[in-house]
Length: 373
View 1 (cartoon, rainbow, N blue to C red):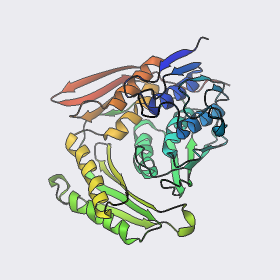
View 2 (view 1 turned 180 degrees about the horizontal axis):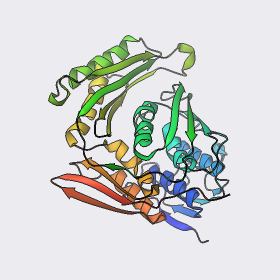
View 3 (view 1 turned 60 degrees about the horizontal axis):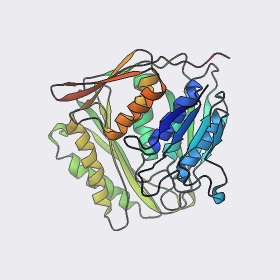
């Protein structure tokens, strides 16, 4: 079979094209050639976390991979702008380890591996150990994946996966560890129909610190509450934010962050987050996360902008028509990129409807099931 060519500079032009296209290529046994990887970035080509994701994907499906050598010192992997990926058969029910090596995001490793490991004829779960950064900027925090992404995908699609944060890894040292257990679905994923947002049931959150006083977590939580309590839609709503401090022997360095999420009675979830930064007060980080959550709430959708693009690949793979209310704002660039990749590599068909100012994504999925033995 000739390879499918993907231009990595299309639309958002970042690592998402790499992750989604490789995951879909593995599932569909499609040889892939990706060019112009991150071509418009200040530092084009693969970074450590992208190369680690490719190597993990290649191990999962016994792929032939060129352009992402494991020899980081050779300069072949980091900075590569072209990758060829020829997948073999996906093997589930065993244990895999993905190591970013740097403080790069472990949740981005999860994004590439999760769709590949959801489908299997064998009932045994697959276990992932992901090493690197757990709470960083420019990527979902591990707590977001744990409390927003995976629970939403469980309710919406029937996907069954759990994530445990065994050790936090903050920038610049990394050293974090996630343990993920993925149980295969029987047959295909169900479609999602989520058009009515409904009211907020409750707001939950976690403010976490390591290597600094626990009081900073409490300040983050209070900063968030101060902002959330001023919103009329949250009047009388239960808001509970857990404050945690990692043991000194269970983190590679100091850091902090906060993740908030609002669960909606229509079945949706909205999130907001912030990562601690030198020179910024802990309270201001809590306020930042709360404002991000309120922005999603005021947008009127059933998902926030970060969840919006991450579920596109599952809508494409699901059986039947999915429909998702994403709010008043137009689709994010990441979402449009995820749709473009899905339509390049699958027969899924996406449309976007606008009704009374609300955008809804509809998708006729391909009803993917694991190939027979």
